Length: 251
Ligand code: 13P
Image 1 (cartoon, rainbow, N blue to C red):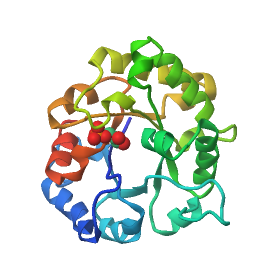
Image 2 (image 1 turned 180 degrees about the vertical axis):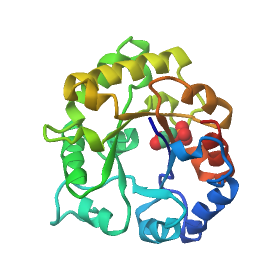
Image 3 (image 1 turned 90 degrees about the vertical axis):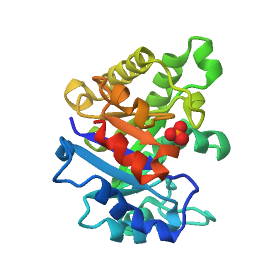
Image 4 (image 1 turned 90 degrees about the horizontal axis):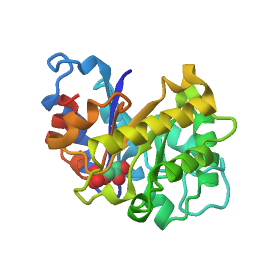
């Protein structure tokens, strides 16, 4: 399975950052890095730089994604972008249901499911984020919470051939903390099981399941070596192209 190394820039950066894809490529040239052919790189900047980033990434073999989209195609939704509008910028991925969207902006499983449907219809690849809170983990409910988010956030009409899942434990985001390698393996195995129930093994086995939450050069190798971990969704360390290249080189 190919590995997806995705940087979620959240609300960081300005238009001068369009140079970053070239900066990344200079650090991680396609023809030098071992195994590079199996790695897909994705940068998800704030919406105002999507189009410029998509243009700057052409020919560099780097995809561009957004961090959200609306489920409706148009209408009186001040401040929102539809999936078709995102696609028009040249982006081809969209992160949906990130825990910050769920906690701060009220994204529910139902809404994430509708957004997923809209994104796939627009030709975008959705990356659906799931993950338990610290309290849920401490109460022993991590698998149950993640299973229920998976069930609720994947729409009935979902195309399993154009879908990525990211397991991001809320308590590991931006904290420097990560679950143990065993705990990551357990949840990824559980996610694979949920996807198998939903799509059947043939499709489920091809869905990339990413890990996110305090991924950095020092822990990437161990995490990315896990059987069911097909990449990483990176916050803080993805703002720095040297760190991002080091994480990609760890694949
Ligand atoms: P950090 O890598 O900063 O923990 O953020 C992870 C994240 O939220 C990626 O979507």
